[in-house]
Image (cartoon, rainbow over all chains, first blue to last red; front, side):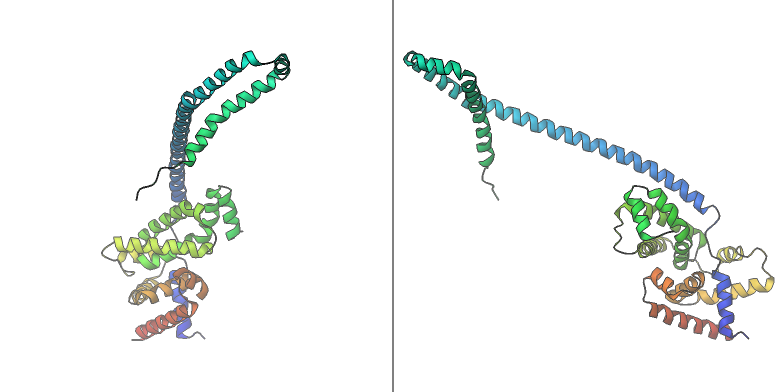
Length: 139
Length: 177
């Protein structure tokens, strides 16, 4: 025998138990998702292009600023040092003995390499000094 | 088989479409029922259900698995339903002719008595306070699972039981008049 409550349960079950979306629901959703997917792919491609362009601009600016600072250091420090070296060599040349000449001939490539490293180190040291010397930030 | 881990795995492999294909059969009816319990309008509930799955598809890459997938989807569904409810005025009723037609469409050949019973029953459900109405609809749609309804409405199971008891008592009393 069914109680009034179980009868109500049955009626409510019959009323709401079969509640579902329409037959074309999945097809409509798939179509919308496909459209969304295309929009998404286009947006992603555009975003990637924008990011790539920004990265390129940033790299170019960095390169330009590095080139400017190198040129700046070359014109001031390196030319000065090179001039001093030339003066030193010209002054010392007549006083160099034959032995020194032999040694310099023997170790010539090493001496040139060492000088090259020294000359290259000057702008790098200058850059390092430039980077560590930050302007005082105003509030 | 649908598990949160499987869905996460598909999302991480950038296979969102496959993840949605798994989620759709498991959650379509539940999300629709939840939207319907808020909106009481079949067409609006279907639209909200579509929007919910689109939102889920968009948000899947951000799903971290901290909450369960069902909790996350129901939260999206509740928010979407409430937004649709706020945007729509005036409110329809379960006993509106349109809603009646939709319910009758579930049964291909209802008898005249059955239609009268359904209409009366829908009116009774319609007269319930919102929370009781939602619990009644989802409980009988969800094959009588207190836990399922509690998860869908983000309520403790005890509250669902209380609301259900009150709703049944109210309907029995109203039907006995």
